[in-house]
Image (cartoon, rainbow, N blue to C red; front, side, top):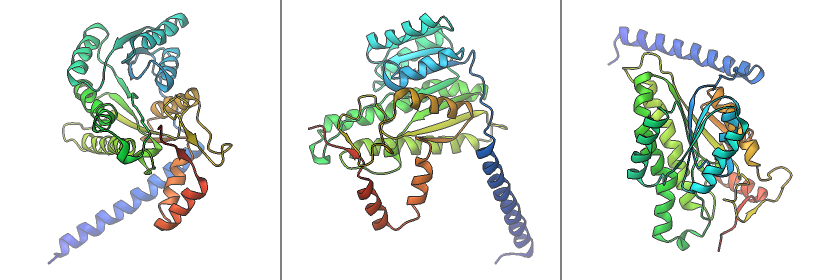
Length: 307
């Protein structure tokens, strides 16, 4: 039975909650009109996986142009070095290239130690590397499914285990994870990929919650940003299809990188590319399941199986 004291305490907490909800709603509405000022990244050590091409390469260029020290990781040593060479031509900052198979935990540990020794501890970590084979579910081989999970999910764990401890010790840092719209909505021909991106979404949300409530961090200054791109023109989408290409066309990697950079510099917790997809997803979730399926069928956007 609830005592009078407990009832008063619950009522007080409820009033405080309503005040907080009202305040945060007003604050969020205000920030739609007056965005948060973008923080400087000059002098930050930014580690980017998958920096040899696509979004990763464009991110490396943009961070370098803003004065950050860029650490590029990629399995392809040649393309990764090309990214660094282009950065060095700018003469704006310093960049480093490291070949690394992020799916191999032992290699991640080895290369991470080199980075810590030769460059320093990254203060901004961008887990961008990923693969997206597109097939009917029963056509995936066990090896392909494992590879998708190793690169798209487990690599995040191995890299975070190497660099997050020093961020926690210093109470300073920013982790950015490339998820996908496929981490919000299940799509045909992408079952393992969707599963991997839903996992990334859960990883980032739960890790953010864990650190934000940690007793030993009085004021959490470690930020987490999860990015949900629609199909980006990086070559991963080999056979995209869309009924309304003028509204749902492939996003250029440079445009995607610009959104990611802004989201990180403004400490956004989540950002979709294009930006309107987050609102679209929230609205769709209000409708009944059959209505959502009808809307998805009407839009008819997705990818065909590779083979």
